[in-house]
Image 1 (cartoon, rainbow, N blue to C red):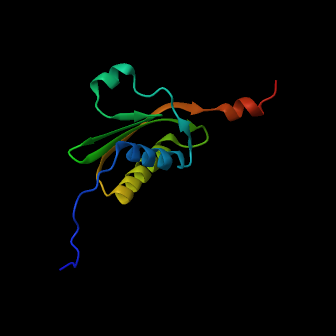
Image 2 (cartoon, helix red, strand yellow):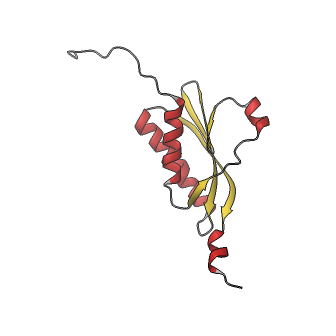
Image 3 (cartoon, rainbow, N blue to C red):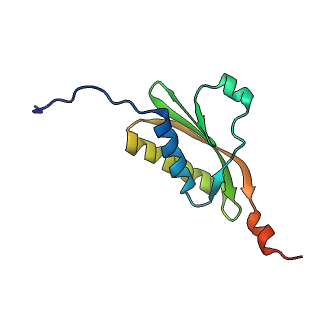
Length: 122
C-alpha cells in the first residue's frame, strides 16, 4: 500500500501535443520544414482538431491522432522518412505524455530542391 495515494488528475493541453509532434518531426533526417499549405479551409470546417504551423492534432476517445504537412529534402527517400517520422512522433507522444497514438498521417506537400538551384551555374 502506498503511503500517499495519488489524487487529482492531469490534463495535457493540445498545444503540448502539437509542440511534441512538431519538435519530433522537424528533427527527423530528411525533413526540411513544415508546409504553410496545411489542410484547406473546407477541411477545417468539417474536421475537428487543433491546427498550428503544418500540424493538426485531435483526440478521439483518449487516443491522439496527428496529421503532419511537410516539405522534405530531396536527397532522402520519401517512404523511409515518412516511416521514421511516424515512428518517432508515436514514440515521443507515448513516452512523454503516456497517451496512446491512433495514427500519424504524413502529408508531403513538396520536396525542397533549393540545393540544386544554388549550386548550378548558367
